[in-house]
Amino acid sequence: MTASLEASFTRRFPAAAVEIDHLAVPLAARVTVVFGPSGAGKSTLLRCLAGLEQPDRGWIRFGGVCWHDSARRLTLPTRARSVGYVPQDYALFPHLTVAGNIGYGLRHAGRDARARRVAELLAWLGLEPLRARLPGSLSGGQQQRVALARALARRPALLLLDEPFGALDLPSRARLRGELRDLLKQARTPTLLVTHDRTEALALGDDAVVLEAGRVLQRGPVHEVFCRPLSLGVARAVAIETIQPAQVRRIDAGLVTLSAAGHTLTALAPELPPGTAAVYLCIRAEDVILVQGGHGRSSPRNILPCVVRTLSPDGPMMRLELDCGFPLAALLTRQACAELDLEPGARVEAMIKAPQLHLIPR
Image (cartoon, rainbow, N blue to C red; front, side):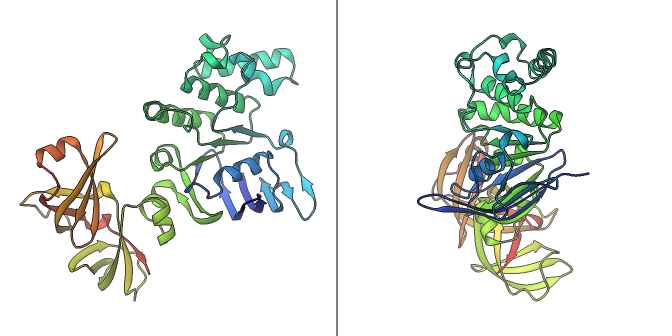
C-alpha cells in the first residue's frame, strides 16, 4: 500500500506565521521536491514533520497514523515517527567518528545488529576508508553522505532532506547531484526534499509540490510542474523567465493563434479551455533559439525579430535579454554567442516551437 503524507497546520513565530494549507502527497518509493521561494514555509514544514517543532494549530498524518493533532492535544514524539532527517548543515556530532555518527541512532539496538548495520551503510556509501575520521576532517560531500547514512540507519518510513546542497559550493553541488539521486533511488525510501533551486528540483525529484506562503499551488510530476504551470503564481515560483499577456485569436484542434505586442504566434495547447480570450504566454529561456537570417520550417515555429539588450554570464551559459516588442530571455552557450557575434544592439531572430509556448488562462 502506498504511504501518504497529509498535513494542514499553522506554526506561529513572533514576527510571522507559516500556514500549510492541506498538503497531500502520495509518496511511495519516490522523491517529492518541496519547492518555493525563501519564506514559503518549506523548512518549517520539514521540522514540523520531523517533530522538531510543534504546530500551534492543525494536524499531520502519515500512512494513516496521526503524528500531530492540536485539537486532540496529541503529538507523537520524533523517535516514534520513523523519520530520517538531514538538516541543511548536516549537524554531525563533531566528537564522534564517521562510524559513531552513523550508529548513533542505533545505540539502543544490540551491539551485533548495530555493527552490521553500520558496516552495511559504510560499504554502500563508500565510507569504509573514513570510518575512524572525525567530521571536521571530511569534505562537504563526504559529510553529506555520513548525514544521509545516519538518517537511513534505522530504516525510516520517511526521509526528510532540507536543502541538501545548501552547505556546499557550486562546483560540489553540480558534481554531487547525480550521486545523491542515485543513492536516493537505491535507498527506495519515500523522500521529501526541500529546495529553492530549480536545477536541483529537476535533477533530484520525481514529483514536485510548489509552496507559496504555505499554500500548495500545484502538485504533480516534476517536469510537468516546472514546464506547464497551472497558474501565474506557479509560473513565477518556478522562475519561468518570460511571462507576457496575450490575446487568443483562434483555437482550432488544439492549435492556438495568439497576438502579443504586435506579433502573431502559434501555440500547441490542447488543454486550453474553449472560449478562452486572454492568456499569459510563458516561455522558458532554454526554449528560445537565436539565428541571424534564414530559417527553416520543418516544424511549427514562431519567428520574432529581436534586438539584443544585454548579455550576462549564467554559469557555463550566457543569459540574453532581448527586445521583440516585449522582453524575452534566452539562454545560449558561450560558443553560440561567439559564432553569432552577439553583443548589445545586435539584431537577431528568435525561434520558438509551438509546443514550447505554454498558455495560462487569465
